Image (cartoon, rainbow, N blue to C red; front, side, top):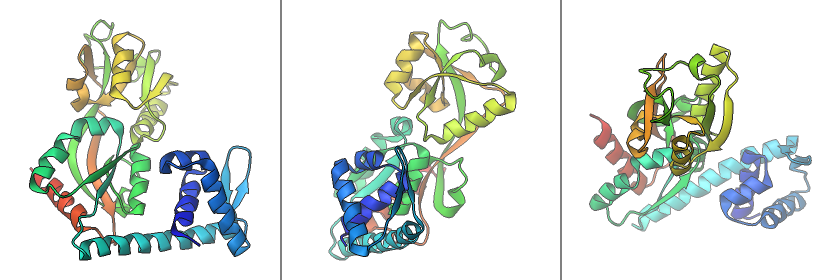
Length: 289
């Protein structure tokens, strides 16, 4: 059994897909399939129930996954402690939703590296839900904190924001002082990608208003969203702090207000590298006021 085999197996288990795991890990699908087959052969078990487009764990696979997660955590913790022991600066790994990276990076890292030039970063752009799952693998994550598992993690709120409805300046709604979900029920909408916490928040608002939204695009890149808005192809729900990056658009307040908290999260009861500790402390000191 090799560590990389466990890493591949856990990624497939978490994502229910070899294709998605391969994309996340930047390896080929055959490499992941081979690793899983080798594990099954070595331990004489079937780890997955395989259907055409979906993988689910067998009972034996469930137990194997629980053990594998513990082993990987111990391995990662030990590796990080050895880096610190050897005074080799460990890389700070952070999961962050693409639109939040527009607000916080790269200026935040630039400022941090003025204090700690030897500490490097590796960023992973995911939706808030997936980014928070990365915390279980020992990474940090900057996320929308409106999701149910936040109490299971260490966290610090760095920003309070609200969602506005963005349209082009020539849009009929552009002169409104505020809009309701009912007012935009027939509007073509641009939503975040499907693993976004904001989507869950908005879905709740749609259901409460009895509205079936007319979604024409799921996107994560601000450039794409802005182009759709400016060409009057649709409106988008965005953090108000993103408005300054969207020339040619107007952000209309939503009634009732949809508040959002953005924060950094990390795993409870787990070893944190000296590099990560320095970054967490920097974030807390920078945003405490």
